[in-house]
Structures are given as C-alpha cells and as structure tokens.
Image 1 (cartoon, helix red, strand yellow):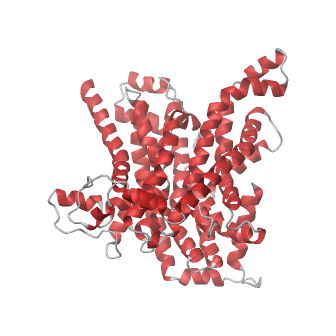
Image 2 (tube, each protein chain N blue to C red):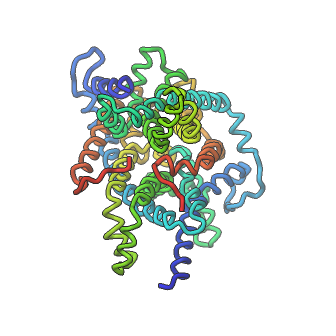
Image 3 (spheres, each protein chain N blue to C red):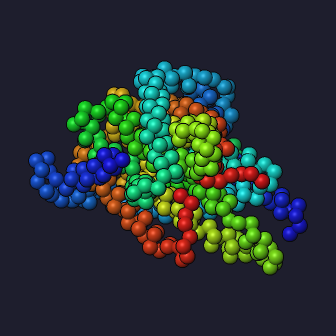
Length: 267
Length: 270
C-alpha cells in the first residue's frame, strides 16, 4: 500500500518540481500553465464535473427509487441498470462514437426521420457544444450505475417505520421523499458525490476517443504530455494538479456536507 | 392518483430508463456486425444491409490484438489472485480482530480511494523503468492490484461481516481449532462473495486503460492496444474493438448481479 500510494505521490511531486539534474524549479509548472491547452483543460474538467455529477445524481436517484419500490420486475430492472458498470470508459467512448460520428446512428436516425439530408459533423472543433454534450452523455450513461448502487444501499438501510410514520401522518409521496428519505439518505449521497466527483475529474478514455485533443481535460493532457511529447515532468505537473484538485474538492465536500448528527456513511 | 395509474407511470419510467441503458449496447453490437462498406454509404441504415463477421474478424486478426488479449487475460487473472490473497485476509482481520491501528488502517483505505489513483501511473512509470518493470505484465499487474486492493478489502470485510462470529465460536466449542473453524464454517459461506469480488476485480483490470497505456510500450493489454492505435484505426475497427471488450465484461457482471448489490451492503429480499 505504502509503496504504491505514498512513494508515487512523493515522486510525482519531486518530478514536477525538479530539473533533470535535481535542482528545484517551477519551470515545469510554468510550462504547464503557459501551455495553450492548460486553461482549456482546467475549464473543461471543471465544466464536465459540474454537469455530469448532478445529472448522474438525479438519474441514479430515480433508478434507485424505482428498484427500491420492489414491485414485480425490480431485479430485472436492477440488472439492466447495472450493466454499464461493467463497461470501461474507453468502450463507452467507442459506443457513443458509433452514435455521434458522422456516419453514426444519430445521423442515420435523423435522416430516416426525414429531418436532415446530409450527414452532420458533430464531433469537430467547430461545434464544441456537441463535443462536450457527447462526452457528458457518454459519462452519464456509463457511470450512473455506481451512484445508483450506493444510493440503493442507503435506501435499503432506511427503517420502514419512518416511511410508515410518514404515511400515517398523510404525507404525499413528494413530502415523504423530501422530508424523510432525503435527509436519511444524506450519508449515501455524500459518499456518492465524493466518489463520483473524484472519478469525473479524472475522465480520460471517452475524451480521447470522442474528441482527440479537441476538448482537452487534465487527465488527457497528462497522457498527451507523457505519450506524445515524452515529457514526464510536465505530465507529473498535470497529475499533481489533478491530485490537489481532488483533495481540495473532497475536503470541500466534507466541510460543507458534514452530517449534522452522528450519521455514518455506508462506505 | 389511482393505484393503476401510479403503477403504469412506474413501469413506463423504468422502461424508458432501461431502454436508455440498453440501446447504446445494442447499437455497438449492430455496428460490430455491420460490413465495412456500409460505413461509406449514405444514407446509412441503422440495421446493417447484412450481418457479417467481417469487421470482427478484421479486428481479431489485426496486428497485436490477439497478443494483447492474452496479455489482458494474464494481467487480470494475476490481479485477481494477488489482490484476493492480500485483500481477503486484510478484510477478515478488519472484521474479526480489534488490533492496534485498526482505525488508522480503515481510514488509510478510505484515503486511497480519495486520490485519483490512475494518475499514479506517470510517476510509477519512472520508478518501473528504474526497477526494470516498465513495459512488463508484472508492472501492469502490480498497478492493477494497487487500484483493486482497497475495493477488495472493503468488499471482503463486508462479506465477512455477514458471516456471524457465533458460527465460528460454535464450531470452536464443538472441538474445531480456530483455523479449522475458519476453513470448515466460514470459508464455504463466504466463497460466493469472494468469487464475486474476484470477478469485479477481473473486470476492473480488464477495463483499465490509463495506467496500462502509460506503463507499457510493446506488451500492451487490450484497452491499451486499442487506445494506442486509436488515431490510426478505421471506424469499423474501433466499433469491433469496443464490442469485443464489452462482451466478456457484461457477461461477468450479469453473472454476479445478485452479489453486486450485496457488495455494497444491500439485499433485494422482499
């Protein structure tokens, strides 16, 4: 554990603040910050996280509530909802590429419906909103099941008494959800938020598949600096920036979402 | 709202969400079975003009694919074995013994989940070059074990919690040794859970792309191989590759779907 977490962290730090011959320098950070892609990468990473995480939370909550009603077929729906969990971010990018590419299913469907004549090019630098949209959809599609499972775990821990009490007092389903379920689910929601935000900040596979370098994010820039430019020091600077950002966000969640009572999370 | 209307709304919403989940998978399946000439014609139909294995065959026979598939299998299996050997005892210890530093250990596991772990790949690559582990399957395996270990510990701890300690103690009063009690009573009960977490680890390793790409050049795993050739490969290659990667993963996850919920501490019992 120590070897594989602490040592690399120290090393990524050292790599990013030292020159080849060991002198300390901020050169790599300057190079990173002055790179045209850096500001865009930072902005995009932030934007993606801010859109994807809330969307997932709403979608996952809907799924979890549906499964948790335990009507006939719940297990079937749960199994279906959980499927994307098994799919890698790379494969998910490829799936959505088959839909959004020029000769893809979206164009085929639109043409079939008589809405367009010529194939529309969605994934190009001329339409950044489509690039972002395709990426967000791909991420929401793939990673919602994880959030759903965490929320479902939380839902099932809620004692029936509370819900029955709510019914006794004549609460509407909405009141029951907002005043009983939501507060009790708080620890699970917090866990889901932290884990998903962390993973959203790291988004990588679909970015490269769907946009190449047209929509840079921090993780993909780290990859490009390492793989194409062969500069592991600037790549480390990116990695470190990402790590610091994650720590900051987690800390933020813990400060702002601290449970009021002594509630303890599921995970 | 009358009950039947509420029920219908429930099933309508559930079905819409199920379709949202399933349709993209069906589409990539169709894309993988579409002959390549279809991708150059317009207007394009959603159902291919004919179903063909041409793209898939082309993909499987492409340079490096077969080898990287074998590499992926080797790495994933090794990851499962190592992380279960290391993680399961740790999970057992967490639930059965109160030892010094237990809290710290638990927190440590949680902390590791806070970090963007795949990002560790860049510095590890530098270390691995020094240790001559760079571009070896062992290196990728070690990395994947690191990524999977926190999950394995937490999951197995969850599995062990559900096997009551009383059972072990009962076995001990009936003359079993502590070890005997573990092997004869607890182990059979937790085996399915362990198998499930093993499969989850397998899928995690099979899918992992960032670290595998960074840590290898020639000895690539399947996702790394596809990632590395992304810029140069035609569409039908990509779709066939995507389909090829997701099929085993989906089958595995469906196989453990009951445990999937259990793994997060839930049951679906009515």
